[in-house]
Image 1: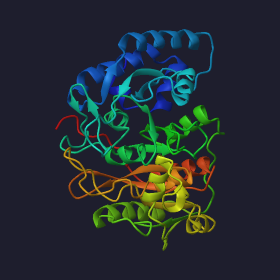
Image 2: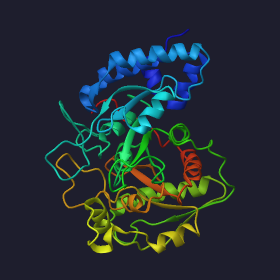
Image 3: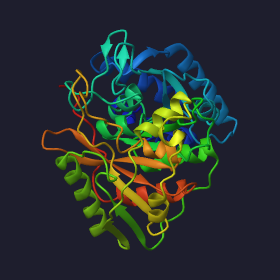
Length: 391
């Protein structure tokens, strides 16, 4: 067997890695050891992990290799996995991923105390840095998960999203972040806003997560026609024109290159979800809207189009000093309230070289269709490039 280097294995997605392990061309011990080598080499600079678990990871990998030799079918055999530090390996999603053969290698950073804003990550060695530019925040709260995947340390990480905490770091680190339809996993909070989900480098791996964790069928071929409605601001957000331009240009390329794809500009005016979200989180039923948020305009739009498309965030990644008065969640947290499945995909880069995300939203329980559409989006071009290896 030809030994692959850690760099070779780091370029592979979760599905590709598992295929190699199941076929016997690579062992799970090799894939995990290679991931640990990448973490040892690159994480002192990135600070994506709060803890690394080499002993337990290699032990689990050896057990996976024995299971493969016995003929067990493991969809994620030998896939190195980062787990969000606030969940560890005890969340439902982590347990199901591990049962499918994934191997947790460490805990990924989340924000620490001291700030009200959550779009950053903290470790004992300092703040987590964006792999594209160390002066920028990676987003949050699933900060380390996004950085670990974007930098090729692992091909998949667990995340959770109560207002955009999976999608925002995915957008700012140039990877894929998927929030399933609310209720498909147990909520991570009493307000039932926080949904588990993955951060990956491709829609195919996000769909692999869906099938393993949520039990959905394999993604079907996209329909011959697909219609998406574009809104830069949902009717209330103060979206940076540069961010809107990058996201809309990527959608325009999607429309031009994928037969049957149509992107139309729509006038969508949603209520600003801030007060409803705060009411739900506080349990204050006397707050404005009483925490209820079910805009009829969104339901009407999704009866006419297959997808809603927006920028993932209204702003570019901010620096480590924080966002100031900008609400990075303005385009994401409405869908935590409504429960719709939503996905952030890499859209390209702004004029300063920072990643920009485009968000796709589908109707409730149309997660498979959402990810099928994302597969055609991925085919438009080389969206999922790796960040530079040093500053």
